[in-house]
Amino acid sequence: MPVDLSREELERIDELVGARRKIKRGTTLFRNGEKFTSLYAIRTGFFKTCVAAEDGRDQVTGFQMAGEVVGLDGIVHDHHTCDAVALEDAEVCVMPFDRIEELSREVTSLQRHVHKIMSREIVREHGVMLLLGSMRAEERLATFLLNLVQRLHARGFSQSELILRMTREEIGSFLGLKLETVSRTFSRFVEDGIVEVKQRHVRILNTDALREIVNLKSAG
Image 1 (cartoon, helix red, strand yellow):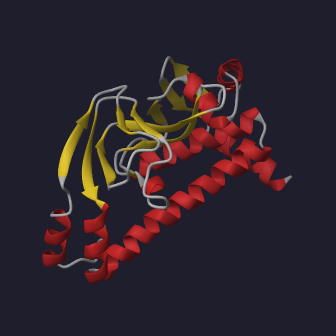
Image 2 (cartoon, rainbow, N blue to C red):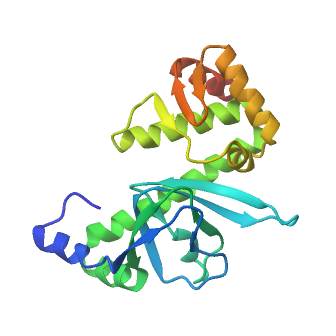
Image 3 (cartoon, rainbow, N blue to C red):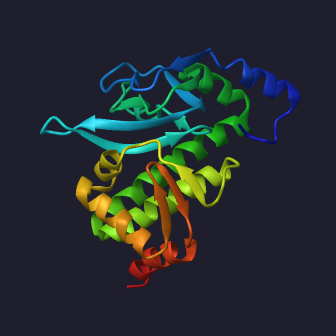
């Protein structure tokens, strides 16, 4: 939430939260085509957003973690355009969008904050399009790991260690890579001493090397 609020404004924003919902791992918070009514602030847990591809498989469009907001996809057409699935047991704060709009008109810093969140989402999607458009497998995976660790660090977690809540297959779906390519690229990073991998636990040993993999592309 915005930081420059008076106590009264903060209390009013607190009232925005209609309810808290617990979502079990593997269950859906909202589905593609469902009527849009609320935004969801993730309190605990991890989600993936996905759409069904033409061949019936799920295409992962993003991963969201505690401290982030899901549901913005529904604002445009008043219905959701993807599924949001919990990758682990999670809890969300339900914020009815009509109340957010109502309060935004009175508390201008809340309106600015909502616009910031939406803008961040647009920038993130643009980044994903660039990622899928022109990068090789190593660059895609390096960018993915750097982005994930940066977002986790912003929430007070380690800068070099992370537990992958998603499967290799889900990472591949998001990055536009086959499962074997994701596994092979992880193995290459391990061989090069860039990361250490124990099942879903990843430790980044050489952040500069990851950055170099990405920046070599940017420079070229």
